[in-house]
Length: 258
Image (spheres, rainbow, N blue to C red):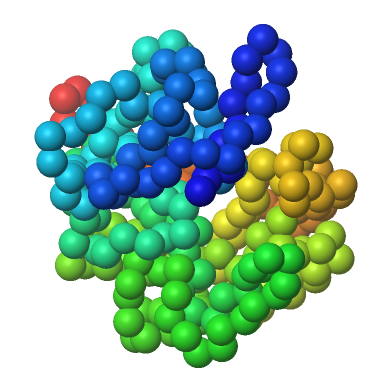
């Protein structure tokens, strides 16, 4: 059974029905929401699908479909300039052999993997798995340990950059967030980027796991990073937001043309 939240006439409706089919994660809403209405399933936003596939989708097709559907809708109502390739595939749980699906769509960087020794909350209880590879695209310990130490990696086999996260706004408190950022900034090796992770649903008062200080946690992140001299970037632009190489290449091209 799935808890499904939808909106009708400005009201929030909750239903405990629907099911996952053999067609991977295709959701049947069974008439509880209007076609094409944006709904929430397990508090993750998806569009209701108005057709069935003749056979189960392969993982490659599934990833391509799930990427293309929201991309197409965003571009339709806001234009191509409003769409930035999403670097975060939630839970970082698909194998590298599928990276080509996202690379073909312009993605250069994958973010939000924990890779090893993650701190997570399950049923409001903290769980920690020290030394265990998890939430990291099924990489083994050589890459996972590198990510734990350095937080970034370029995989030459697949031609893609990886960024690791070390805190999450809906797991770490304001004090823990500030302490982690400050400590990481003071590290001698000092990776010059920091990835910020949060989930907007924890800011919704009607969400069962609502956090009253959700916005304050996010504000603590923005304030602390700004005070330390960091600035926001799009990780898919250039290399982790650093476009110096692209600018240099364009300058060289202009000089040749001139």
